[in-house]
Length: 195
Image (tube, rainbow, N blue to C red; front, side, top):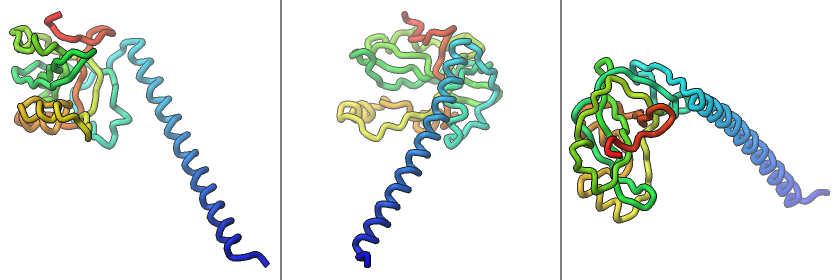
């Protein structure tokens, strides 16, 4: 007669094997989806074929796999309001310049690029770009749970340390809280009009 411990052990081992197999299958499916998505993004960037977009209303945080890092062109106009987001780049302190953009009555932020801290007050940074379109990658709001005490202090000093679209949109009197455009020209990221 088989003891209860052996039966319980066999059931436990069988359950763990099934769970491991299910987890492997799930991870492999996620890998295939991610690979397909990144191949599509790489192809779009290699061919530099942006998709014309007139509205962000159909983009939700839940469906970000379908639109995140999509190369788009949006026609509209830059607005005067901008926010600086504190960010280090290659060991130098500086800011991302987040500029409001309006297209067909909808407002969203455009990351115009990074500028060093010492140049953040330059007039060329504050100047509203005259272009009537923006081409770039759609990105979602950043959400970093842990930040150093230096960055937390910067946030208290009224500078954001992450691209938090919820806070940016609230401070701008309403803008898209799901996606922003990381501006590009040709196939090179623009760092700023200063350089």
